[in-house]
Image (cartoon, rainbow, N blue to C red; front, side, top):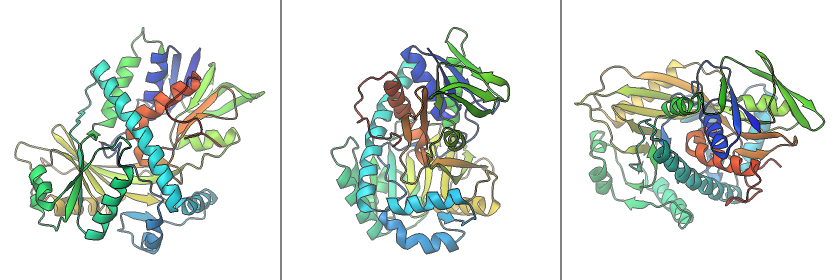
Length: 416
């Protein structure tokens, strides 16, 4: 059986890997010239298996006025005359309930723990080199109320596979001495020892190198846009691509934002909408004072991940900006936040800026599994957790395609 995977970002590449390991012949199609160069290219680099609380939460409701008016807010909402945005936004508001947020947190945590196990096994089996670091992640807090809420959230997650330690201010500084640079009022922290970091783009390239071997049973079609699905009698008969018709026995929609258009053609709406984020990549020198651990500055919602001799910094969510172009105001703000947090960073040069569009669903849960068409599946809508959940999502989809019982209940992450 040959399965065509649409998309060669981290979701599509891990899907191809796990399907091939299952014994399927695989074809991967992507509109770009190489894997991983859109949303996967320069993301935050943190693999946050245990820090998966959804964006939709009751606590966001009081913040909506600032999201709409403050262009420098960590999350900025630009209202547009766009029916898709309004449908997404209304669904997002409906998801901002305590019960929904708790349910989604536990579901994402379950998928995150599965992803951690599968990714680490893949790294061990294949020896992939992508600046992978299992050093854990430190969350730092600068106000008592937010810190108390975070401790309560971690207590809620206790027993679900995500270990954590509550740290005093001094313990944070002892664990990551570079935090003493800023002089900001850290009131405490939470350390998650089982979190990882790595370069998502490099992993995509490593997967491609593994799968593109002539004997691998995987074909790649780059510079090929999937324009539509040819539907016949409850099945997909072929893909209509820029290079002509492409046939397989089964098909997986795994092309991020493009999944919205293809799914709509197939008669269902996954409610995937772009959330724009930004990153900076700093080249370091032996004199640079950069964190060794992954660090999340909760006040500014900026994350820091060490990638060998580089530091990846990422932050911000812009809703209603569907252009992947870099906005200088946001990049300059991110640079200022880095300087305030790490004034003695001393990088080798100015950082490399990047912006990407993350394919998000209103309640932060991806869709993984069957569609109304018997030979069409979907693996999309991961938002900012695509890298984190990629291996677990691919493993779950593989099991569902093979009709194998899974540890994750059938209804979870399924299209309803």
